[in-house]
Image 1 (cartoon, rainbow, N blue to C red):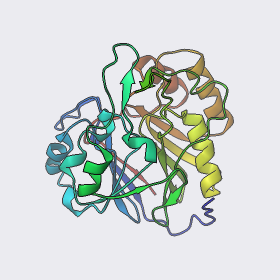
Image 2 (image 1 turned 180 degrees about the vertical axis):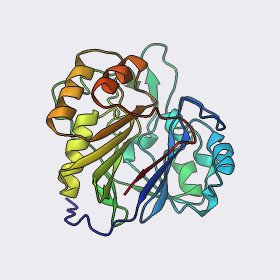
Image 3 (image 1 turned 90 degrees about the vertical axis):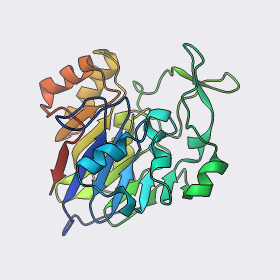
Image 4 (image 1 turned 135 degrees about the vertical axis):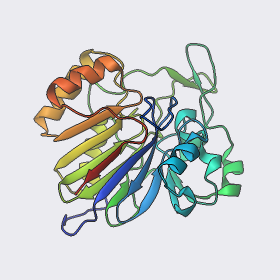
Length: 271
């Protein structure tokens, strides 16, 4: 594992929401997720469903052409659909990001829109099941072990051969700050608690200041309640759930962890 031991002299972390389900006052929204992340390295985490990130970035005076690195959390089209609007970058993702996948409900396809061969023509691609230390502060977590008994137990997706797709490519970022780890998730298909615990193992940092992104909690149900219990037991400071986290689940989280709802154009700073 890629151990990290000192949290001194970190640069301030700034996360700008370029794409999410809820519109800000001036930025547009879609069903998707994309974050512009600035720390000791600047990167784009996911690309939303379309080239909407270009519109919002221009309004926010963010120059996407200057970004060197893109990280994809997984291969669903609402996280990768805007990829071809930001070509010519380094691209980091899990090797299963490029597989075909379908919804069980109607067999509609929801995977990435381009083949791996096509994508490699436009990006310098690195695929890894293992964690990658992108910079002094930022870690790509690789494949996340599914250890809790209340997360990632069922799936609404299937592969081409009809077998269950548990989205094993689902990954996240862990960012070291002076206040502790910031965990950035796309959908947390691996389970947000599994993701946080893996981030602790990878970085060697136990303190978690913030978890932000999609938590894949669909309702106020057992998984949501057990997730809240786990957050409290593990002394997570703050959460900002968004995207695939239902309003019912957000309402339950808000009772214990009051947060400002994620909207396109919002900025979060730590440090």
